[in-house]
Image 1 (tube, rainbow, N blue to C red):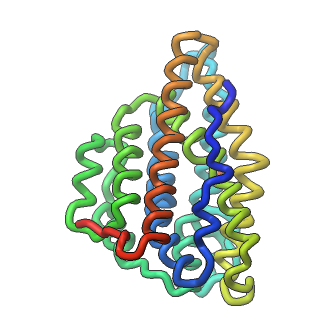
Image 2: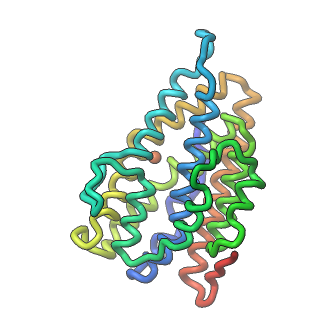
Length: 263
Ligand SMILES: [Fe+2]
């Protein structure tokens, strides 16, 4: 299926990030989307692979190969130089290093992750996942965006998750990251993890994950007009959730006093 016309390539968010303080504020919002992306990817992987398949006519081989490869890269990519000396890190870990490089606060996301230590998040309902956010200081746009992601995960439906993953995530991020990189707000020597993170996603999502995820959605539609219709509706919802997220961050950046952080 073709991606819905999003218009998000021209979103004013990247243009509103003009100095280091604004980059910090953006990263303190966006980190929650880095975190819940991993939750969504793993929930989708779990949905597609939770039982060994014995039915050889089950045609999900391409979708399973795509999500396994993406999760492997998200969780254990070849790491840039890092203070822990690890050769492989998750994209979330690298993003947290990037936040430290620019002086952004990681306290809220660390608090959130600590709450979920040892919990199988894919077994939780959307409401249970939302409840995890209670009491953690989170920017309102990020909270709303995660609520949408949790609703998608809570659906426990592979097609719904794959469409949100593809059309609300993989296909939209490269243009934003390219615009951020073009602004050259901080030199690569001062923020090597940030530059690695942005460049890696522009390359990986644009050339590999994006096309692979589109093929995954096509496979999950099984040539069914009904499933294709579901996918199209879901794709528009996922793009809209992303638009509202970026609109909210943009407001936080551009309207003084408009950065509500709720608990
Ligand atoms: Fe990706």
